[in-house]
Image (cartoon, rainbow, N blue to C red; front, side, top):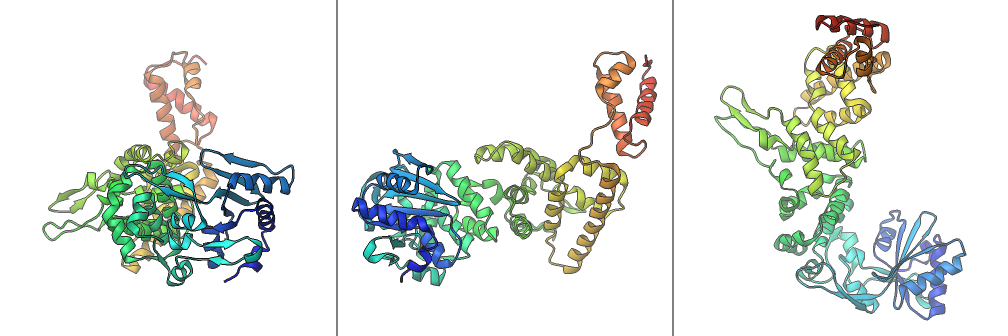
Amino acid sequence: MNFKEQLVQYPILEVVAQAASRLGVDVYIIGGFVRDLILKRGSKDIDIVAVGSGIELAELVASELGPDVHVSIYKTFGTAQIRQGELEVEFVGARKESYRSDSRKPAVEDGTLQDDQNRRDFTINAMGISLNKSTFGDLVDPFEGVKSLRKRIIRTPLAPDITFSDDPLRMMRAIRFASQLNFDIEPDTFDAIIAMKDRISIVSMERVSDELNKIILSPTPSYGFKLLYHAGILSIIFPELVELQGVETRDGKGHKDNFYHTLQVLDNVSEHTDDLWLRWAAILHDIAKPATKKFDKKVGWSFHNHEEIGARMVPSIFRRMKLPLNEKMKFVKKLVRLHLRPIVLSKEEITDSAMRRLLVEAGEDIEALMKLCRADITSKNPEKVKRFLHNFDIVEQKLKDLEERDALRNFQPVITGEIIIEAFGIKPSKEVGIIKESVREAILEGIVPNEYEPAFALMIEEGKKMGLVPVV
């Protein structure tokens, strides 16, 4: 199999080939770029392996490309990187690695192309393409990676226990590739993941979360989560999610399996957005149900206040999983806290005041919240789903009309604490907060518009009720 014609569209590869020839070293493309080329998937990352110094080759390539081309050198790892347009080309010398049982840091030494391919994680990532003059474009496939692609399976080039013992993160990578490509994991390979799952604990949480996020961003993320669950890895890295699994029945009354419901909500959201953090909100929207589950003989199972308690759990989960604690976390926390509000509004007569409050609290995230709420309808009864979605249409139209009329998305009452202090000639106090809240509530209830004169008049009235005398 030869890929000479396909490689022509990447002019930098000809420069690499010529530079390698001048240095007298053999050179190959290896890994994901080769896989994606065969699958006809676009790829912007090219890994170059030189049977010699990858850094020396990168420096020569950069000089050939011109003075404006910068090469980033990472001597600790023996790698170098060149960016050209949208392409990111990484250079490394062929190497072989050995690991201690308690570490992911390998002992590295120079090796042959075969050594380098032996250390790769999966057969679909161990294929190479020659850039050498006499064999330019030829496929080097010692582990039948093409066959694995045709069969749509993930398997390791060496015995799976060796591959996973060397680098336990590869267990998650196997599941990630299966989820991204919709491939099966070869039975012996999956059995090895089950047997060695506990070794995932030596991997840094940053690396684990990076792979988990890639699973979350795959086309049908529930597939990856189910593989993680059945392998036993999910209970190690994300025990709160596993606690959702199972159905308890008492006095003939049961509840839905909140684990599989959550995965369905995640898939539903994923059909409409590639926003990683909205997908995280789907994962965490019911996370507090185990902590709030109660049984009542009359009404059956309830999960009262799970949205508020779930929102409080978000920061600690993000912190433990080394996810960002910035606006992204706050976005997820907000959606978890509000996810029931539109559902409640869709079940009962809609009041303007309830709509105003939702718009004010959701702010710029109202569209994301509505996507989450629509995804949360997972009934097996199509008529019920149709009815709920129709009600959501009504809610969304009402929200749109209110937003156009009242501009509530970035709501701030026109009466501030400073205005109250100046109007009554008082110092900052509890009374200021009470008056401010009364005016805010009146605006949200539609009693007065959010305009200065009527809101100021109400402020004076509220102050007089408390015995305050205006000085203006």
